[in-house]
Length: 225
Image (cartoon, rainbow, N blue to C red; front, side):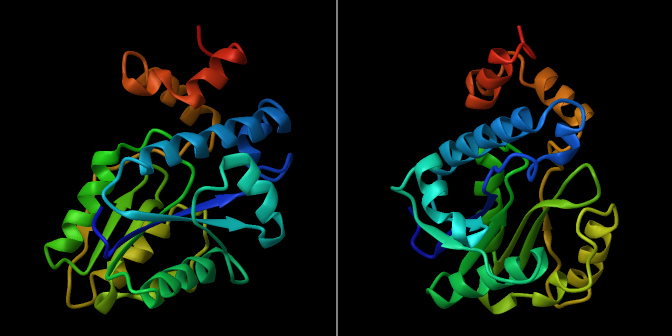
């Protein structure tokens, strides 16, 4: 493990009716919440094999005990702080830089099959003196963002309509206006809509992810044979 690397994982407590609403609209709140629980389990499993420290930033803050029971008390946790997603991400970066980490990467919990190689690639980019790194998602946002401490750019977390297709474009405009050009990772796909879930199932056949907790949950719910 490399001591100056930190991976931040943003998660939400899977309260019925408050996670994966677009998936719940096609099925049920119980299904969407259960699916999300397993997304996080699979992401944590990937992070456990990484060459970095990782901390799970959760929301809402009052659900800390329930979250630890759900995903395991052995991990490092911190509450997300801020009025909305942008300030929460900015504050998480600031907290980890203040803790002494020189390279910090943040991911969300919408890509359960995100490969460990891509996360490692993001840290290698920062090791190579690149000031920032970003992973574009297929919906016009990004699934990963990372910075070296001296090149942190908090401006990207302000004035953004999160969830809109313009998030990546606006973020890139700010990052590319600085001294360092961001490293660009391969595109990946968030699982937010019915077609995203269909694509996840199709691309996971005959891959290691076929044995994941997410795919087991889908088989148990008769989505996969």
